[in-house]
Length: 436
Length: 171
Image 1 (cartoon, each protein chain N blue to C red):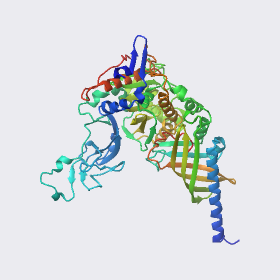
Image 2: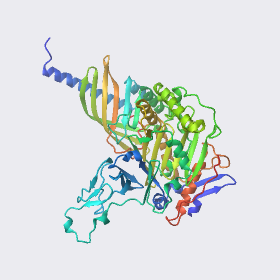
Image 3: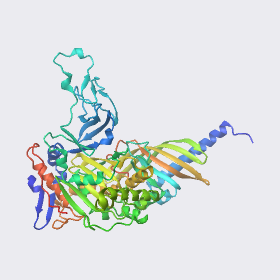
Image 4: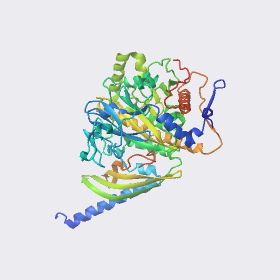
């Protein structure tokens, strides 16, 4: 099938469909590796993971083993995790603090800025052998936006801030919630899903499924009683919420958080009576700092964000960072972490984590059913019969939170990326107008 | 009365060990049979059920993100959910088989018995056989004459929930 025919869009009839081979064809998976994962900015980690000189973390990004580290010079770098001699991994633990990395194979030693500083029996090499040519190698690009580090394997990609585009406004809405800054909480939920990676991108934006799929979770939270009364509903995002395309394939789903617990800052009984005063004080402080309109968006709305292609930031029961990548055309690896405000009280931190785990985790009351749905869809794609999936919801109106405007913008960017003839071409823009 | 002889003490330890083992095996049988209401009745009111994240096996759930952190109310909610036909990951229920071995009584403090054991739990569903491997830490409390679970922690040896994806059964 011609790439251009993978999406069927009819703006007049309000129809948007994607061919199911997008989830199943090996040649599309190969093309995605080259045109998306070797091209885009990909989430690497949070600055708090490498707070001190020498702090390092091991990560696999788009199937490539990497590690990233704050050097003794204070600068953050990422490296391909492979010795420049015979290729063994030089970083062999998930996290730690080191001044040097000695490859266990032949004991070549690198400093924490990547320079090769020692080779055993160096006299055996000819004078033309130059250690300076054998430093550890960094991915093409590394930049951060307010402490969120991204890498790209594409040297010609636009700068990170330009790439994030309209997503920056919503990242700010999250990151501004803590005056003291943020820290990554220890504990990582790592899991596999037997579905194509794009199912996670789509599910991360989608609110349409929440009521039918997650009924058992809401039954549980409702049994605990009502949350704090809500301020009058402003026009944005309104009673029905909004589904927004933010450019470059990024999107956000934003909706009122009535009876949904938010440590910042919408109290609900699931957060415990002991945190009520503290959560209300956090809200008052945000009103003082940012005014009622912005404080409302911060405290009384939830957001599901997708930074294209594979980084979902959910600001719902806490801040969840979920990044995922293909491990095959019909399987993926997922990593979930959570950010919390620095200097948060022990009581609120404890309740924040309890609340997070009860809903969002792979052992929670909701997320296991997301996985079941994604895997079931993947099985369905091999059933034959229908050739398309449908993403037409809300196509000819101002899209509500249950609509699929952001999902369509993901697919348009995906097709634009796949259709790019050279990885050197900059990301194109194709979004529906999203007037507020 | 004389203090108990070594032989008597060995007998007491042996009987306790057998009692604890029988308790764990009975619990496993209830879970494999999905008799979750009966299983829930084994817990004390102040009980906790924990599954730490795979990279922080010793993490404190108040400070580290875990996979499961249930008090009795949430455990009751979990059981209700699994019994409801709307826990889609477990409807229809998966088949499970729990192999519980290497049971040790590690400490006895008043009425509380600390227990360690190894587990291999198979979850079988939708064409896949997924093994969950790890160890249990229990605190069993003697309430009147029966043993109850005051603390139940399942620590996975897996580096990630891969390919399982979830801990949707009771682990």
